[in-house]
Length: 122
Image 1 (cartoon, rainbow, N blue to C red):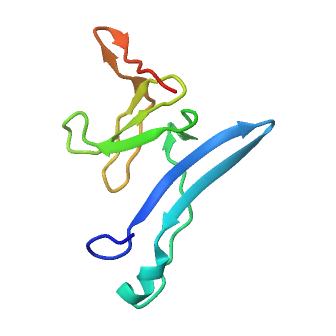
Image 2 (image 1 turned 180 degrees about the vertical axis):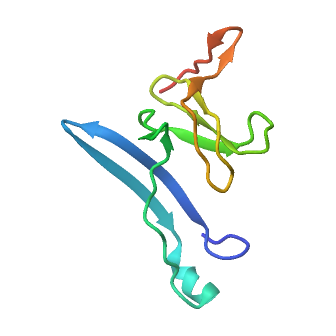
């Protein structure tokens, strides 16, 4: 896969899940590196994964979460909205830091008509 400027890199899933008494982190990264050398003259080097935190703890909203970053509350900073597969709810994390160094507050679920929005899953 190539994008307009070079290789297209897609982060598919980053999930932290409990298994017994241990935590395992699975990060899947798909990258089309075959075109990277001809396009840039060198193989790209990636940094290691970074856990996104809220209140000093890694965010874990279950399996198959779908995070999206955008300015939800019009304060000029990108917040994070995360869809959940397991309960079909949408969590909102306000960015109380800066865009260059985001800090996410504890989440709250999105509501409509005073009820938590819950979408069918499965």
